[in-house]
Length: 489
Ligand SMILES: C=C(O[C@H]1C=CC=C(C(=O)O)[C@@H]1O)C(=O)O
Image (cartoon, rainbow, N blue to C red; front, side, top):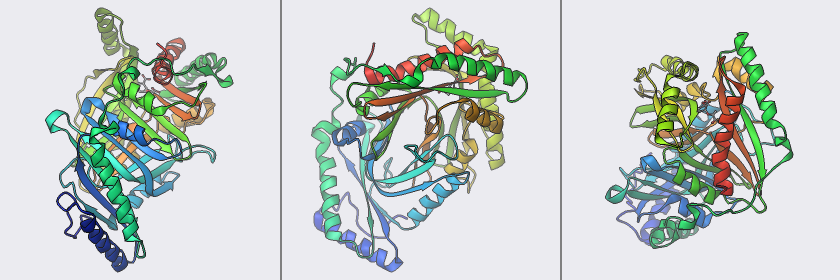
């Protein structure tokens, strides 16, 4: 899919060169008798992708953003030039087909060897294979953005790339397309000295109150209902219906004025450096944002990384208390069982793909600002012919968000939870044109719609679970997003 054309946007930066290149692309579309995705990457001065997104943010515009500060990576893109939706059990394969077909008719230039160059397919899979007709996000959606900006690394090793994508058909007006792309690239290059490169103003750091929050009706007595649900799940586990089930809660909040997801994301990325701060906007006014601790998979250069993350404890207020809580988590039979079920299920689901998984027998602690988890990193070389979406399709949903056995637990979730999960505990991320991919689990999120926010939090339930402790765990998880949205101390 790399361009056979000679234009290098790094060295050939003039409107005339660009126009000549786009004319060649249109010729290619005529020869192939099908539209071509044209993707042009250039290196630009340092930018902050979230600041770029915030600069141009409009609630009704489609976008995707993900950032993991501890790994110095961030990517954002907006407006769809191509999109595709699928549903049902074949949704992963259908998305892969869409990616393959798009890349078979793609002309990709610039940014050779740079991280995040070329088109990225921003993708989201809901928790269940199907979603209801009125839900804001489908069960599988993928889009190629009109523009994309990404950074990797820090200091002198930091690189920022901007990508412009467009679709050229046999009869496209290349002059108009050229003007648009040229303007967009000039804008990104010029953003270096202005808002796009600047970190957010300091006053967001500690967050003055933006507006009050108020719980909507459905939350009334909802905590008590959750305790009952956990109690009955424990009974069903003891009766042998399943071994583990992850039960979630939804909490509806309302602000006095429209919520600003970008500010909340800025707070989340500052507080949860090890998490994936993320936002997916559907282009119809709703966005799904959060700071997720859980990587579902990363594929880079043929190497797969995934992890088993489960079991939770609060952080201590003093070093001694924190240490004691961490040791108790590592030593707890109940928590170890909860996490081991996740590890075993990952091993079981990936073995048929021929992967030789490498992992330690003992879990580690993953310490976040508000909670700590048990965590086992897993690595494997991907066999030839196995791609990221094949792995994703085998992995999702892991028992960190579903349960064991998967089918019985998922049926239990449908029967017990009284709200649609949508993208909560789903898989969000991207694949690129070189087979690289990164997906995280849609955890600790909020669905934002104007003044309204629906927060989601869940906990893994096993036979030894104590319902009141699971309730406390979900409260702790909710509090982080509530603070990010409403800046309550
Ligand atoms: C299902 C959630 O977290 C999962 C990930 C880590 C720890 C978990 C736990 O301890 O229950 C959950 O399995 C959630 O935050 O909604």
